Length: 433
Image (cartoon, rainbow, N blue to C red; front, side):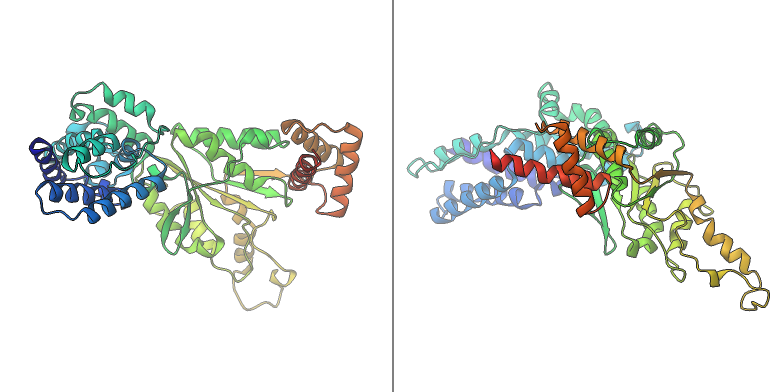
């Protein structure tokens, strides 16, 4: 037991000596793990409370069960998303020699400790339990076989000393980002903060039928962004239900693993766009700022913040950020006939300049993709393609007849209406057996 007790005390001391990666254990699984180690040490020294030891194990078990990860996978997840001075600096430099030597040395020091923690998993906890409290019933061990980091696990397994794997881990930070950008791929700007979206819309580009030219053009522009070439801001304009928003969201599912991130900004938050861009511009990742259903009333000044981002200011436009906006209007700022200058209009000397500014605002987007309303043929092609995707066995004539009925009785002919019809039909056929 003395050997086990000494091992636990050394591990706790090493954890306390972390210099950069302290936050790896800041969440509930890490905190309950530390509390459990401390209770085991108390028990080993004869000063423990066995009820508290049982409570401590239960708290850790519950915390791990909530994550649905094994201890090793959880620890790697925390390592990869940790936001500390080393991770912040390493994404800006491809050469570790450019970083302060003390920061690099501290990172290597911490990786050795994290390696020790990585091997101190649920099975190891039970071994310590058996040595410290052999007469206390052995608890159920936490084990989860699924791992989200199997490739990294295998690469690290080749190193006896994780400090030697620092370059590998640094490369992951550069490709996947750090902090919330490593944890999430989709975000929503809310109350001055980037809020991660755990389960973004899973739609794939292949699921969106029709508008092939628009899809190909948008994909090429996004790939240019990812490859470091000039990419344009894009306005997706057209009828409601044509799939404009779904197309933008589908890019994240296709290209998210290549370093693409999506930040959704509501119209009411457009004033914060310059601040958002400033936060994103130093990241190695590429960002689409997504504004859905964009339009402005004549007295709405929110478009000015968007104009600043589209045109830039005295500072250079960030090469890693583009704006993709959808709208049902070609001219985004509503204009009335009364807005046109009249011969006797004395309210503003250069009134035509104001009108032209409003009318030309859409031109600030370098690329405009038009989504025309679906005619009957296009609508039925979308329905047929969706029915094929979901293996719906219905005669073509019946399928088309019911699809046209659906369009007449509900929301007209559009990609959205076709998807709603197919979803309804899938449920109906499934329940019918």
